[in-house]
Image 1 (cartoon, one colour):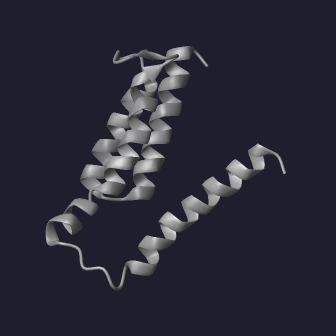
Image 2 (cartoon, helix red, strand yellow):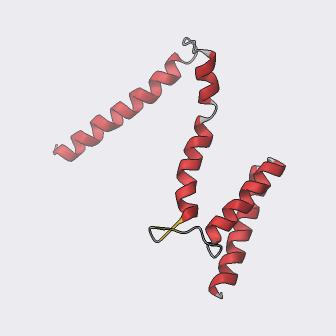
Image 3 (cartoon, helix red, strand yellow):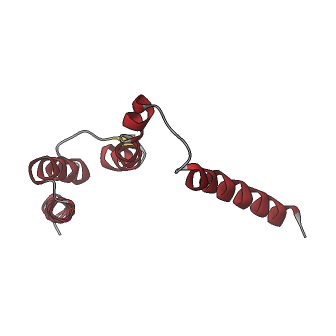
Amino acid sequence: MNSTWIIFFVLGTLTYLTRFAFIALWGRLRLPAWVQRALTFVPVAVLSAMILPELVFSDGHLNLALDNPRLLAGAAAVLVAYRTRSTLLTILVGMVVFWGLRFLLTGG
């Protein structure tokens, strides 16, 4: 067995054990209230960290101009999410705005 497979096996095992530890200990572990409150923000923080760079960077450069369809579609999606709290409507409006702006700004 070469070293690549050993690395895959070790990293896979470590990933599994770290995730399994939280599942196995969830019922027995009492977290302080402040930790539980902080954990409610983790999904939003992770999702924001993944999406924001896609909205503001084009070809590796920061693009905050009004000709950036991703940024404008993201802003529209944020407004819809804030007003409606509907995930499906947020995705639909964001995609329609993105496709429409891309079509208008690139000429087809």
